[in-house]
Length: 264
Length: 265
Image: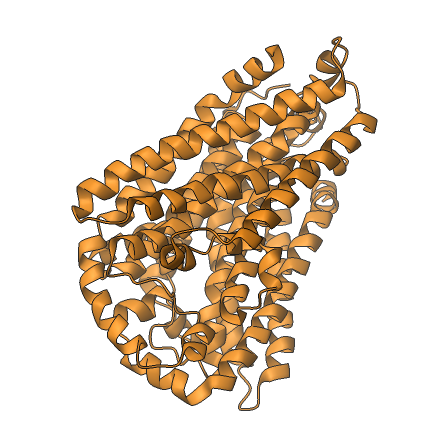
């Protein structure tokens, strides 16, 4: 429990900065919506004529950009980008930073088994991710309400936040898994960034060219299409795949850290 | 000079990795050029029927994806993002790495002034960025030439690629300034990623609002690819603003670093 509290305190500052950034992003994004709404009808006309490739490039397949729910759905990609960055870095550093800060010997000589230390750190990661997610949710609900003149879309926002949370868990687990076998914190961070950027660009490439759609299994950004999620439906196969990735990566960090030679 | 050489030896390899990554990404995207450009010509027809305010408000790219340069410009925005993360990363690390690696007292006790240290490190950062742009441009030239096999304007192509260096200098300067003004930076990459993505989001906003004042806030707006393609040149106001910011970041770094309290081991 002490370790969890200690971790929460240590990550508090960065969490606050991330949350403020999200609130700012949402606020700014909604200003942009006002601009789109203003051109309303003709914008819709234009979009209807667009070939699928351009629509999916902009992330707005089958989404009506001039309705507030459609617009919010398009915006979701950037939440995923920021949420994923936060999660993958948190995962990659939470354990490896002890070696970097030369506090590993201090922590690992305590009468707590390594597995317990990892569990405590995992708990801290999940709490951090949940706070990030909830702040995004409440900021979204608040700012959307400012511009929404139709029906409330709070349910759709909630569904999207669930898919965001799964995405955050996947990337945090990937970061953790990498930190298990990476030599040091620096390598863990750069490897995780590489993996993260590759998955992001892969999803951009799939949007651009649908013949490589089969690659979608390799990028979590493609697991839960916004349109489906907003209707409240989650693909069972991808839910299963996500769970498998999360469990496998977490199991890996338990195994590798059990035998790790801690550098002091 | 020794400091410069040491810096270069330390970071040359990672620069090559990053540049290779950028080129591999480009290769991957360029392979889809033929398929995308066919569909893209339909889009142009549709877009041309609508007023420009609508097109802009939707954030529709003003790039013509059916041409080599238009498509390259679209892909380039992603590559520039990666290059910017790298530039910010090396900018932040250059001076602060010594503190993290506990080698600061070793370096600072040498008979060289702090100004000399900053100069050597800043020069190594500039060299790395210049090398990166050069290697990338050469690689990009080969990839684009082989894959598309179509003629395109080489001057514009060079101008687009050169913006990697100019935007990179901005981020490297910002990184240097940040690294001396923040008390302690524990890990560089999360900070670098966050800041670059922040600027990228500002740029998205700027693209749909098209507010000339807002454009000054983000270096990504300084070298707008659609406008480079049309004008075959940079816009002088933005180049000046870029240069002024780079110089002021660097000057502030010198001033702050001279008085900075460096923790010893």
